[in-house]
Structures are given as C-alpha cells and as structure tokens.
Length: 382
Image 1 (cartoon, rainbow, N blue to C red):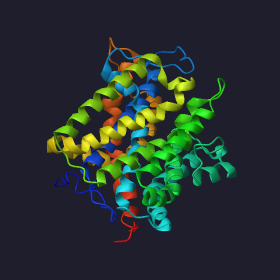
Image 2 (image 1 turned 180 degrees about the horizontal axis):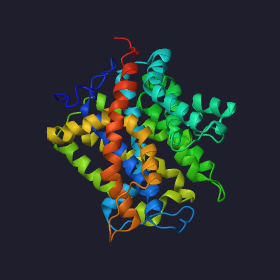
Image 3 (image 1 turned 120 degrees about the vertical axis):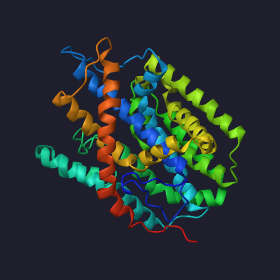
Image 4 (image 1 turned 90 degrees about the vertical axis):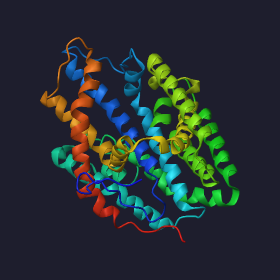
C-alpha cells in the first residue's frame, strides 16, 4: 500500500526494524482508539448535557440501536489493543527470543515520552496530588494499582499502559517457552490463568476490577494475540474462507456488544466473570486474522485514513479524555433537540472531539513520539 502524506509526512509511520509493516494492523489500532474515545465521550459528556440532576453511581446507558450500543461499549477495544500487542511482538520476533534490554528500550521510547509529558503537566496543574510513592508506582509499571498518581484526565488512562508494561516485562520469557514447546506452552498458560481467576471468585470479591485492570485479568488477551501470530506465521493465506471468518466474528462481536449493553455486563460480578477476558480475546483474535484477509478488499480512500489514524492511535488514546473534559467544562457542546443526553454526547464526540483529537494527535506524534521512535534498535538477530 502506498503511503499518502497529506500533511507533509506528519503521520508517516516510523518503520520498525524488527518486522514488516502491515497496514491492516494500523487500521485496526485506529478503529480501536476511536471506540475507546466514543466510550469515554459518550459517558463523560452525558452529565454536561443531561441537566442538573445527579447521575447515580454505576449508571449504565442502555442503547436503543446497535450502533449506539457499540459506541457505549467501546471499552471492549482495550482488550483488542492487547490482542494486537501480543500479535505484533510475536510476529516481530520471527521465531526468536528478543534481546531483553533492547526490547524494553524500544518500548520505553514508544510509550514514555508522551506519558512523561502528561504526567508533568498533571503535577504542575495539581502539585497537591504529588506523592513519592505514587510517582514510583506510576513510573515503574504500577499505575493500575491503588496509590499511583491518578489525576484525571491527564493520567487517567495510565492503568492500561501499566498492563502493557507488565506484559512487556514477561514477553521475552514467554517467548523462551514458545520456542521450546510452541503453541502448547501458550495454551497451558491460558489454562493456568483461567484456573487462577476462577479460584479467586467469592461473592464479595471484586471480579470486575480483577478482570478489567490487572494483568491476571488481561493476560489471556496478550496470549491469544501471540497464538494468532504463531498461526499467521505458519503460512496464513488470505482468501474467501478468512473473509468469511471476519464476517462471522464481526457479527458475533456485535451480538455480544448488544447483549452486554442491554444487560449491564460491565458491572456483572458473578461467577462467570472470570471468562469475560477470554471470550473477548477469542473474538478479537479471530477478527484480527479475518481482517488481515479482507483488508485487501478495502478501498484506499477508506484504508489510508484508517492507517493514519492507527499511526497516531497512541496519542489519540492518551489525549482524548483531556479534550472531552475541556469541551465539557467550557460548555462548548452542541445541543440536538429531540435527542437524549447520551445520544447528544455521542454526536458531540463525533463532531467536536474526534476532529480536535485527530489534529492534536497528529502534532503529538510528529513532535513528541516520532523523534524517539527513530531511535529504536533491532532486538532480534538476523
């Protein structure tokens, strides 16, 4: 795919020296970032559009159509990011164990520059929230734990970066097992993780937090991404069969989204909660493989913007909550008569938040992320 440069190359991807560029993966990352943005926009802007009445704790907006349900359940895209991470790193290794130091050095260059900038801004604006222990937890991959520096909207999404980093720290070790025992090693790890989650269940135990914001709750999503990469590397051939897999898994995902929205799955804390991350991972992994096939049919006028969105998706992910909060508090929102507050929030996300975030993310990528990405090293031998 020829890469367009409508902004003078501001969003041209920095090619990794460890793997060939797959535009379809950037397209998927772009879509995932948009889903997360709509999830936050729909919920965080609703109070600004719903009048003076207070919103009850753990309120869940029930959609009256599938599209709105997908936007409201956009948190599921976090698991998609993690499946993609497992896929990309495994594919990049090419059947070898990555050099541990260089691998982590590359991940530092990828994630920390923008993260540190946002952390500095947050502490400058709220110096009273500074704590040495909180800073230590935030900087050393524990932002998903209580006591880390959580100054919303600047650091509110660092918890997901902590999960990514916890995976980065163990990924080379997992690859040692993959090289020795292949897919069976990953399947065994999946069984162990499921057994641990199931063993922790108690009626008064917070399974929602465990499955949503801890590495034990998310590890199977990284592992399913790794399994998908091993399968892909064995000679994946795009074709009608995989196109059909994409269509089927897309329908399954939409059905699950609708059911989740209508039944408030996000807050479900019952005994079957331990299966939720695995269900998401299986669907996302199958959809990823199917998309790698059907993406060849997507016209360039749609695929290219998606690629550009994927390139800046890290900035989109970290910056969108700031834009949402600023627009809401400033009252710069558009009212749509005859629509519910939730629908108006989603429309404002599409018409205001999305273009502003895209613009900011383009410049964030160019001037904050890209200079450091160009310093990355090769972490697998030829």
